[in-house]
Image (tube, rainbow, N blue to C red; front, side, top):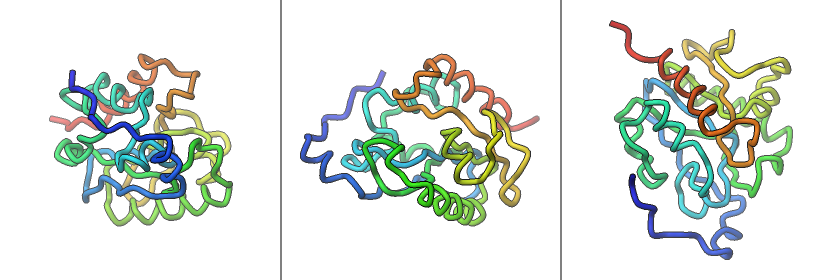
Length: 188
């Protein structure tokens, strides 16, 4: 198992990260583009997606078979060579996603649509049911593949991997990620 990175943000670093943005991990024609709701303060302070200890994105990615080993957030640039990327619905960092406004989610959905049409991933995997429902006006959406597309990009909604999402254990989260991985594996 990889060691933890040496840098741990101080309370002052976390406070200073509020309202900042971090770079997407993007490339054209990815197999799956994972889309978080917005970066948390740890991500803002470190510049790495899903960086807060306790976030289950990286373990779920590994347990589902998307990555050959458990990657650390500071290894996120290895994802495009695996056909994977990361973006966010809203770029602004906050302590919690519930600090975002409805308008930010609506604007984020429009910006995400433009990004997807530009980069053309095979699948967009939105990590957060409520954020997807708000941003795209789909009140009855459930976890899994969606009937609509963005251009030729399929849309999946997966549970939010935040440790605050108590509805899903890591095993259940990894199972949802595995279903997506299996659906996007190259066919012989």
